[in-house]
Image 1 (cartoon, rainbow, N blue to C red):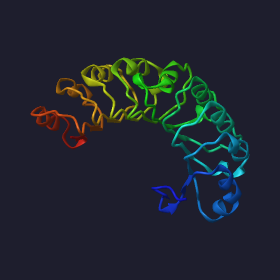
Image 2 (image 1 turned 60 degrees about the vertical axis):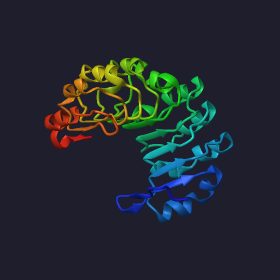
Image 3 (image 1 turned 90 degrees about the vertical axis):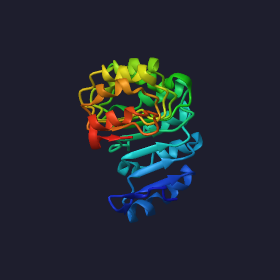
Length: 243
C-alpha cells in the first residue's frame, strides 16, 4: 500500500509493506512505474528477510522504516543487504530493545552511512540503542536525530551529549521525554557545534534555562507550561520560538 504520506517531491515515492514476500514479487512492476525511494516495513518477519535482502530494487531506497521494530536475526539479514547503496535514513519503531537487535543495527553495513536516524524505544532511560549510540567511538555523521517519545531522562541524555554522536547533528528532536530543568541545563552546556533546530515539546523545562539556548535558529517548546515566562521567551527568541 502507499504510505500515509506517499509523496516525495510531488511524486508517489513511499510505500508501506506488510508482507515482504509480496513486496519482492511485485517489486519489478512497482519500481518500474513509480520513483519509490522510501519503504515502511510494518511487519519484519525472519522468513521474508533473505528474499527481501536479495531484492536489487533496494538500491533505490533512501529511507527505511521498521515501524514495529524487529529482532536481531531479522535486522542482521536485512541491513546487511549489499543492495542498500543509497540508504541514508533509518527509522526504528518500538520493540527494538534486545541486545541482539541493537548490536545488529549498529554493526550493520548501512549504519555508518546514515545521515538521519529516528528511534522509538519504550524503556526507562531511553532504551538500549540510545546508550549504544552514545558509546560508539566512530558513530555515523548524523544530521537529523529524532529521539522523541523514548522516556529519556536527563541522566540518560548526559552520556549522549558528551559523545561524538551529536557532533554533526543539525536537527535534534527530544520532544515527549521527561528532561526537566536538569536536561535543559545539560543541553545548554553541551556545546553542540552543528545544532540549528531543537524540539523540546512536552519535556517539562523551566523558564530559567531557556535563555541559554538562544543561539538556535528554531526552538519548539510547545506543550510546556511556561506561564508568564512565555512572554520573556518570546521577547528573547522572537519568531524562532514556537510556544
